[in-house]
Length: 370
Image 1 (cartoon, rainbow, N blue to C red):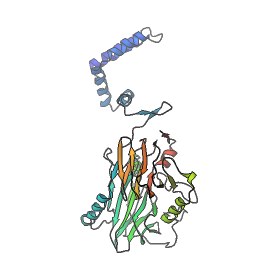
Image 2: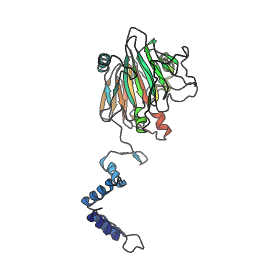
Image 3: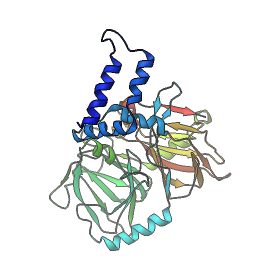
């Protein structure tokens, strides 16, 4: 520590302890604080930094800069992670087609276009990666496994397009949801004359934050298929949710089941355990009735959306995202938002994935209406 910093600390010690027998007066505290001019404080903090130490008071800039809000109970709230953003299907589809020319053989990696939020170094939200993947007619994506959990929502599928998860063959028909839980072998096949396209949703940012990203190639192009008939893993976990079942469940919901913020909601849950599909990721299908305008709300979870059908808008803070079939958009945590169906005649259908299972596990879920 240099002489100037040392002298200030010594003066402060005397001022704060005038008698060594009692608490300094308010006037003495003010006098002591006055000795800490900004230049001296910067010198002291530079000394700390050289020793790889940081004063907690340096975090107080969050309160002063407006990067933190306040909950209704007076406690601090987080800054939204990333910004609302929409990726249009017309652009996604064109890039997917180009990717088949640029990457003619994907080998153990994937021909998947991942959506990066403009305000984040990586990730679609601070906890979720979203992208769209294509495999060509007759192609397969080689077998591998990883610590990252993933789910696939099928955009363009067929009974002869399928994923194998630890030996279980799961058909990928349009609108189906396929799970590939962490550390499960999985490979993808397209045995049709048309491209296979699906939405990839992964918990990569979470695993990256924990420094737990692990990947392993199977060592051969494909794993053996042990079960052709069931969509259930050996441990009883359901791996495939059929679109037709989800649509039927939504259609059967009574009017009193409608959510003021989200319309009719089908929450994907394992039929045996009633748990979310994955420990870090949950999924919902939203049916917005014709003319639906959702109540303004915000939640401590982040979400991603894929438009299955319909047209509408998402009003997120001061931004308006106009969406249509195939579009995808990101909804950061703790952002005021309202989702609306632009049609007065037809329902809209949106698939959504969120991080609530993780947020619930940490005891951090909150929401507000307004």
